[in-house]
Image (cartoon, rainbow, N blue to C red; front, side):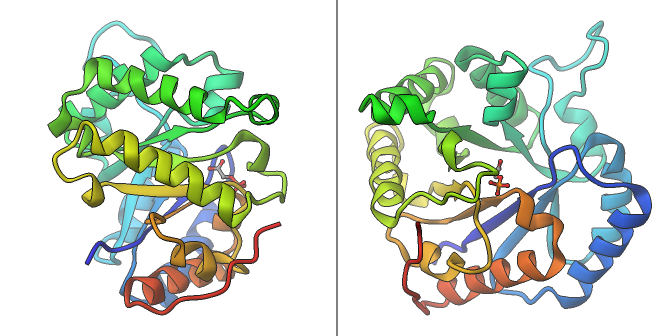
Length: 260
Ligand code: PGA
């Protein structure tokens, strides 16, 4: 059975002392069953690597360069991330797309660089509120996904993790409804099915105001293979509960959906 995946995205938060406390609480109380990862800011990768060793919690980064090496001031390559113990890297988060000018093609090239460097890209796709209200949510996702297929063959697409994160649900406390999530995860699965030999094996996550309350129900939705968690990943109790819900769902224990 596919194990649910819970990925914490710390964004630009943390400091050495606070991180250490959070790592220790998570490592001390994490139960096995789900697969969990923490994507921390670049300067804290070394700290994370030491703190998470043999913990069963994987390490990840939040961005990488599309280039492998050279004169790219300020950039960080896939190889460097691997050297610091990263297994995952978030690519194309909506904050990078909207605030830092990353377009669909750059996101696709970064996914390619991540795969080339032995990392698992967690590629984020999602529509804005205006796009949803205009009825174009699927069109936006198709455009974002098609850009990936322009540079990645089916075998490469099969190695991605895809995270559906509607922009209007990120950091807003407003979770998409079960029907909305299910429809979009299903759309992504359908898109993959046309291009990947075993589309069911690709993990599709939901992200956007995921909290402990409601996580169990989220993981019980068909097509839901886990979560990308922002704010709640900074609170040990919240993140642990989400991981426990994922472990329970992996073992086949369902819940009731409590979206807004
Ligand atoms: P949030 O962030 O859980 O704080 O809404 C999710 C994300 O941006 O990945």
